[in-house]
Amino acid sequence: MIMSIIDSHGRKINYLRLSVTDRCNMRCRYCMPQDGIPKLEHNNILSYEQLYRLSQAAVSLGIEKIRVTGGEPLVRKGIVDFLAQLSELPGLKQLVMTTNGLQLPEMAADLKRSGVQRLNISLDTLRPEVFRSITRRDGLNRVLAGIAAAEEVGLPIKLNMVVMRGVNDAELVDFAAMTLENKISVRFIEYMPAIKEEGWQSLVMPGEDILARIAEQYPFSPVISGELDGPARVYKVAGAQGTIGVITALSGHFCADCNRIRITASGKVRSCLFANDEFDLTQVLADGDNAAIQAVLRKLVAIKPAMHAMNEQEAQHTAFTMAQIGG
Ligand code: SAM
Ligand code: SF4
Image (cartoon, rainbow, N blue to C red):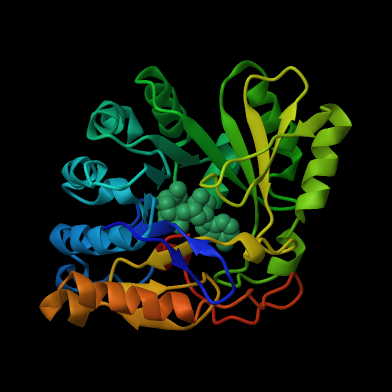
């Protein structure tokens, strides 16, 4: 029987972010140090069988949407078969994935066949030199080709742009312009000081400033979003095919509506990106049944904080890499 799970602040928890690997073929400056992070040994990563059992337990508790993320999910061998299995999970309403897009030119068609319903593709710039300085890799053309390949096979796309003042904010209007002729959603994400790179404060551009910059060129109006649509405030530029949205994790708490929990590739479950409390699921996956996994997830939901305690000036959390937690 499928239930629904409500936390101690009255929020319905129906969204699971599932990280399938901590590995990545990019080194984005806001996510990972230049030399990467110490890699988890293969046997410390949850197997697909374990990830499936976890997802099954979560869905039977009331999770309706799963986002597969990483690290870069497309670098894990066997990902397409895993997605195909997950897409058949009874009770799961939405299966989506976040990817940096580098491998999409070859994989878009298989992903479509696997049953993934939508892709969020990270793209912070349309300028090759800025791309190289943010991701510490070449590859803008491959990502653009990947976006085209996904469109061609009919996968709906959202573009995630992490906005950094003085780095890519000059391109905000160009990104908004992409929605004029294309049925694409562009999400402007406030930079978060995850790894606390030096001088991070100057990079933060609050959502209000992002929207004000776009409004100078393109007037827009709000769009009502659905229950499973995530934390973005969504707008449409007058006459556009697609939408723009802003995710204000830092400046405008969306914690009151937070519906998510996260599972890391090594089997830790977290109720909040910025909370340091997490439970280790590896033991229960080794010797527990569905009810035992559900019990840990319930325990986690019970301690989900009302809101995170991070603000723009002070990052009170311990530094972490988004690639470890899944963004
Ligand atoms: N590798 C995939 C990708 O980049 O799309 C999936 C994992 S990545 C950790 C998930 C999302 O987190 C990406 O859209 C990325 O831009 C975002 N992200 C990572 N670090 C961030 C930060 N410090 N601030 C805001 N967003 C961040
Ligand atoms: Fe890799 Fe994604 Fe992190 Fe960039 S944001 S380093 S692509 S995991």
